[in-house]
Length: 110
Length: 113
Image (cartoon, rainbow over all chains, first blue to last red):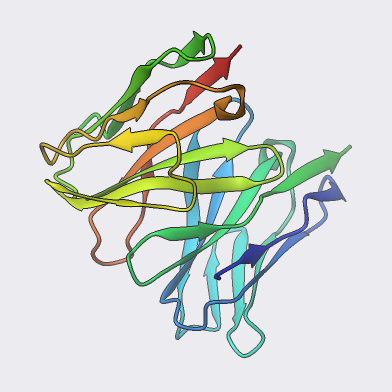
């Protein structure tokens, strides 16, 4: 079946760039998403990319999509303590439902 | 707009009890979903609906029922609660058009003793 995989943890120093990676299996996905979940809070859409795009930039966020390798990444430039959260990668299936990764917990070191 | 609302925020049940988690949205979205979130497993789809009167099973439907009598409401019913259903439950809705952003409720933290 369809599957989305991501590492469970990433630790970076404040001010460095964070790169969170995700792989997926459904080659027919149209949209791929990054959601952010802060401690004790719900889920918030961070950014998304359409499958015919290679890159999308939005302020400190850069999304890269390698459709051939089914690899998606989220780069956060100049990582701040407020970026501490769990980041979920998700792909959309043909029923408009999302297949989710397990989430990557981003830990910021001072 | 209130967006997606869920009640209750917290609930403790005993094994075997039943209860209903409420979810409502005021964005006139056709698609609504229920997910459970467990540590290290991400979000798993329980049930979803593509419109009033239409529901379907997701990845982990056992032990849960849903109904969609109106576009606005999508309640999730636990028939006979089990400790394995201890989780955080999120309701989501999406228009199914454009970028298909899913809007999430704040979540319900359920503990089954």
